[in-house]
Image (cartoon, each protein chain N blue to C red):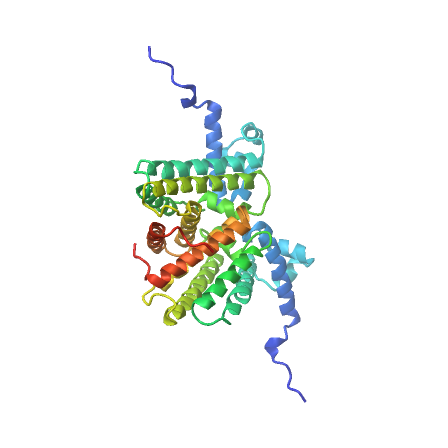
Amino acid sequence: MSPPPAAASVPSKGDLTRQRLTHEAALIARAQGLEGLSIGSVAEAAGMSKSGVFAHFGSREDLQIAVLDAAAEFFAETVFRPALRERRGLPRIEALVERWFDFVAAQPSGGCILTAAASEFDDRPGPVRERVRAKLLQLRGDLERAVQLAIEAGDFHRELDAGQFAFELHALLLVVHHDARLLDPETARARGRSAFRGLVERARRTPFPSA
Amino acid sequence: MSPPPAAASVPSKGDLTRQRLTHEAALIARAQGLEGLSIGSVAEAAGMSKSGVFAHFGSREDLQIAVLDAAAEFFAETVFRPALRERRGLPRIEALVERWFDFVAAQPSGGCILTAAASEFDDRPGPVRERVRAKLLQLRGDLERAVQLAIEAGDFHRELDAGQFAFELHALLLVVHHDARLLDPETARARGRSAFRGLVERARRTPFPSA
C-alpha cells in the first residue's frame, strides 16, 4: 500500500475557496489599488455573499494582506527560487536580475502589486503597511545574502557593503518598472542592463564609497 | 505717473479661486491618490457648489492635470531652479541632488504627487497619463542637459551617455523616496548619497558600459 499523501499537499475545499477569493481580490487590486478592495467588491466579483467572503477573511485588511502575500509568493516562485539553481555568486545574481526584468516586462495591467502597494501605503499606518514593510525587508535581506555569497565566492570586493549593493539594485528595478510602464519597455530594459553592468563593475573594484 | 503693473503679475479673482481649488485638490490627491479626486469632493472641501468648481475646471481630468502641473511647478521652483545658481557642471548636479533629497525628506503625507501618479496612472490611457509622461520626459531632458554641461565642463567622461546617467540618477531618487517612507529616512539619504558618489566616480572614468 502506498502511504497516504501528506496533508499539506491536498488543499481543502476551504483552502481552494480562499485561493479563488484571493485571486479575485488581486484582480480588483490591480485595477483600483489595494484601497479599492472591500469584502463587498470581492463577494460581487466571486458571485458569493458577503458573509461567505467573511468566513474566509475576517476584514478588508485580511484581504489586502492575503493579496500581498500571494504577490510575494509569486515573485519568489518566478524570480527568486529559479535563480537559486545557478552557482552562488555573480551567476546567481545575474540570473535573478534577468528574471526580475522578465517579471517586470510580464506584469499585466496595474504593474507589480508590491511596488504599487509601497507607494499606496507608505503613509497609512496599520497592519497592511507593516506587511508591505516586512516584504520589503525580506527582499532586501534575500538580496544581501546573495551579494554576501558573491563576496565569499570572490566575485566582488571583499569589503563590499552588501546592503548598499541591494539598495542600488532595487533602485534599478524600480526605475525599470517605472520607465517600462510609462515610456518604452525595450529601452528601460537596455538601460537597466547597462546600469547593472556598471554596478557589478564597481562592486568588483571598490567596497562602494561612503557619503 | 508710474506705469500700470503688467497684467501677468496681478492674478485675477478667477486665478486666485483656481489656485485655491487646485490646492484643495492637491490635499485630496495626497490622501486618496489622483483617482480619489472629483469635482464634488473638491467642491465640498472648498465650501463651494459643484457648478462653481465646474466654472474653473471643465472635468475631473482637468482637475487632475492642474494638480500635476502645480506639483511639477513646485518641484521646479524648489529643486531645479535654485540649483541653476551653481556653476554649470558637477557643482550644479550636486546642488540639484541635495535639494532633491531635501524635497523627498520634506514631503508631507502622501509623498511626491508626481511619483505617486506615475504608479497610479501607468496603465490608464488618457490625458492624465499623457501629462504624467510629459512631466517625466521633461525631467529627464532637464537632467540630461545638466549632465551634458558637466561633460562640456570636463567633469565627466567626454563620451558619457547623458541619458543613461539621468536614468540612473532618477533610479536613486526613486529608491530614496521609497525607503525614506517605508524604512528609515536617514539611512535612505545616506545610502542615496553613497550611490550618487559611486555614479559620479563612474561617470568621470567611463562612458558607462553598454549592456
